[in-house]
Length: 327
Image 1 (cartoon, one colour):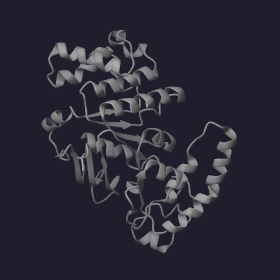
Image 2: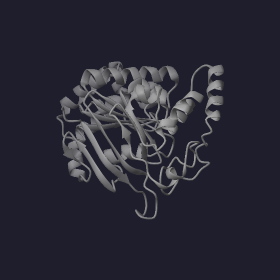
Image 3: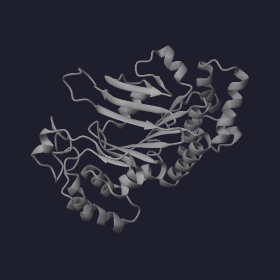
Image 4: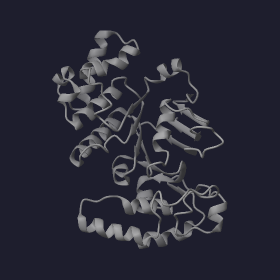
């Protein structure tokens, strides 16, 4: 079996005092192979971005391990991170704030290469190659970010990640700030780059429809725990966890009549809205919102059960099909 490009095992992340606040991430694990996209999906506060920050070294892990090409980087020092930065890059949500307005696009692209002490002539050659790879004209290298559209800026952000020739890229909501047509262009670009360069992509998003477009596998998170995971078709077409059923029903569609029907179907599921219920201190964190919840769900944490293609953490898996029928 080929070694995964990125492996996360039993990751736990606490903010503040470790024993006084619930973990933001609680025992999450997954692998991403070269040439594969893994989607992390969930509502706001589910721990998606915290996982990305822990992988990038922007947030300390309380326990667990993060392995990049067989090397444990969980507690890597700044000096060690400087080496791993070649293989691990990031693209963030907002293309307007992720670029320095005081630098030209060329200066932005060569900056990480300068930090890595790449020869100056090679820096600018790699910057031009990165711009070509994301479909931007050569003269963009001398422009300021203010002279680019949102889609062009996000392409520059992707080029900045590519310029170091990485093996793994963390994409934190990279298209949520873009209009629909630009979203499609950027998603197609990412899929093409992944396939041609055999990149491992961690795609963080809240929209299951967008995740389905780019990802081969998906992990569904709720309050820092994995509710369901598996290949994207199984998870999105036949979800096995009530929370995934709710996310699927809430996914937006461009047709108003269908959107109204889906909204009515979601309300018929009887699943509470986010923010209206407190998390259970024991058992399943979704129990307070789940229409199938029983006493066991509130007192006993359900394990992930199933196969590699589809597994879910629910005590009442046999009854989830009734929710899908309602949807």
